[in-house]
Image 1 (cartoon, rainbow, N blue to C red):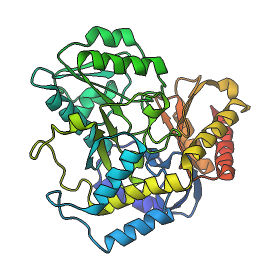
Image 2 (image 1 turned 30 degrees about the vertical axis):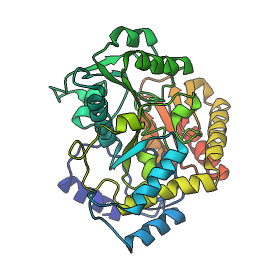
Image 3 (image 1 turned 180 degrees about the horizontal axis):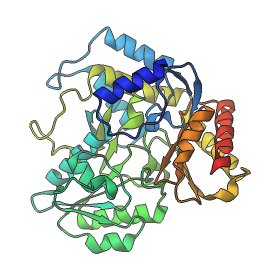
Length: 392
């Protein structure tokens, strides 16, 4: 029995089977290369659901972990720690004037944002409006804002959540009123199929929130921290949210989540209203602050734009371009929708060839490598994907 199979067997007997596993046991990573338990190498074009934005074992992040781990691990949020301040300063420099709260994941960030929208809106504002095919997490409040199969089996959900069609301003206008606490949406829907709204739509959402007094929550868990070629997805269209949620790339692969809110909203979170035991602990905060430093120093926002253009050009000129219904996204956050209704078998074929990608909505390939991937390795990975498409 192989080492990999031994690990799979141990996993099967000990862990809950709530993930659709692929037949690979990864033991090591460097940059955009992964190795499995049997020594086979893979090109990583998915970056752990976008989390490893700087690749695996980036030396600056390793150094940040090492240095902070020798100083202070965790004391609790009743005390001040300097790494949290550094991280907040980095976010403000990269976004807008605001105040931050740190947790462990994007779902927790969504929960915090929903709570902040309701408490800052006053006692008569409870309604949260979100979009069809939106995804905000699997905790109960975030799940209530999420539409689709993820909700099935978990009724009753949190009340006063309404879903409207994405990129349809009239549908949103019809449900907005003085009882609306917030609208929550993604700048680009990831799980929903890599759907990009029109700039006019997002501007219209902002205007409706302003007119009704509702908070605009932008879920930047996927689109944040450089993925789209700007630090945050909303910066492409010049719309500033009242609250934004963050996760995934925020920690560079370390579990970090958080919200960033305009001061007039943030002030409603007072002692006792919300918290997180390990949120923003010094090691996680030090690593997260270093992610921003590296992106700035190495001009990786421009690299995200160049990489996204490379991916799009390659797919458009692919010998299998006729199998593609659409190519969409921004920066190194690209979705390729295939004509076939179900392309999930592509995942297994890519692994056989030594490539890690992802498929959402059964027929949309998600390509979102680390911003540090070289052009040569990106090209090599795309060529493997092109080969895998022969079987679709």
